[in-house]
Image 1 (cartoon, helix red, strand yellow):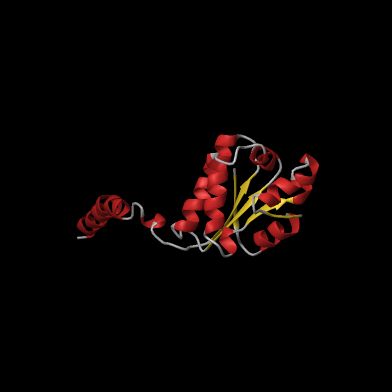
Image 2 (cartoon, helix red, strand yellow):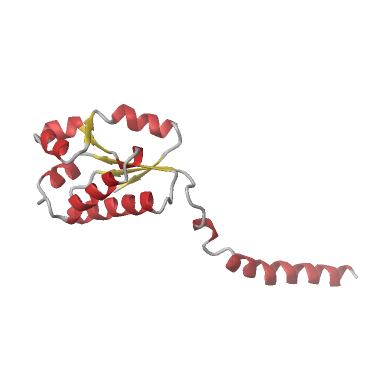
Length: 149
């Protein structure tokens, strides 16, 4: 009796468990508005900047997260300041800003923009330019996840 019961339990564990795993595929991605993220774009490569901004725009629009904050730092600011107004990156910045509210605000590091002499350019793009270190540290303390690009 014990052997047949043990065999039945083992069959259940090894036969049903894998099927249960298949039933949960994608379940971890299903919730909308589950968390807070700061998209930190610091790389100077225009393609990386594009994909960081693309993620942020889609996450805000699709309500993938409760809060999405975009922060531009250093070389990314320098690259963006040199892009033509019709570039994909500038269009994405404008799209994010069009969402309004706190998610529609893009922060730029003032220390970085001052270093590169582009503070006025970042302000012209509609970005909020200030010393972002303290603000981003606060968001970390509040449980925001940082996604670096």
